[in-house]
Amino acid sequence: MLNDKAVAAEEPFNKFLVWYSGAQTDRRRQTYKGNLLVSSVFGLVRKVMSAIFPWANLFRPDVATLATIGLNGQPSARSVLFTGITEGGFAFYTDYDSDKGKELDLNLSAVMLFYWAVPPRQVRIDGKVHKLSREDAGRYWESRSRANQLAAAAVIQSSIISGREEHLEKVRQLEQLYRGKPIPCPDSWGGYSLVPEKIEFWEGKIDWLHDRERYLLNDGNWTKIKLAP
Image (cartoon, rainbow, N blue to C red; front, side):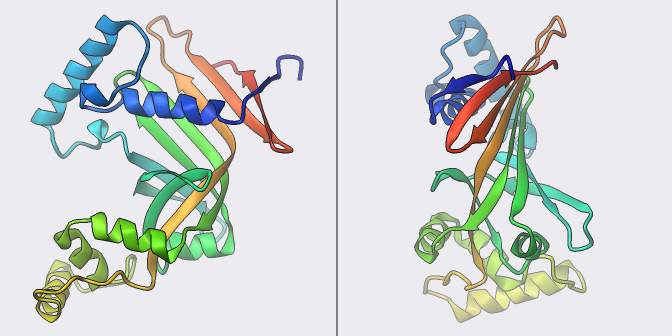
């Protein structure tokens, strides 16, 4: 393409990390290098709104939509928690026996989509996943709260249950079993790294002339192209 531009291997990752940092509620964690006043205003709005609506994913920059190919060949999507750049890709954890785990066993292709409203930015990552090591899973499992561990270990994600009470009862049983002891990481629980083959950035502008660019991986090299919004 005439408007292709070769870029350094780390450029799309660095851009993502700058945007991701800029979406944090805590102003001290931002690395955004734009207008300081604008950045400060965005940070203040996020902090105030996250205090008013602490449950809102709008102010959780680590929540992303993960799309896979369902077992019936139809698209399937859900929200996951992004845990960082690991082994050259975008990491998340789940139950391997869940619907998404079964889907990824059959088709490694996946898409992860981030959207941050303040400022309006979207990042789409297309690629293929690979499983992270059991050591990685164990370390991340230990970083989670005990209540979170109990909820995850008590049932198989996506399995059919009679209702909330069944889940609560299984949590109580597990809590009793491991009272005073650490809760082991289930064998079926672990992480994936989505290694990108394409990363697309979109940034909204007040004049509707939005910015959009795509990074494509070809033979180990990234190229960047500008796209109409």
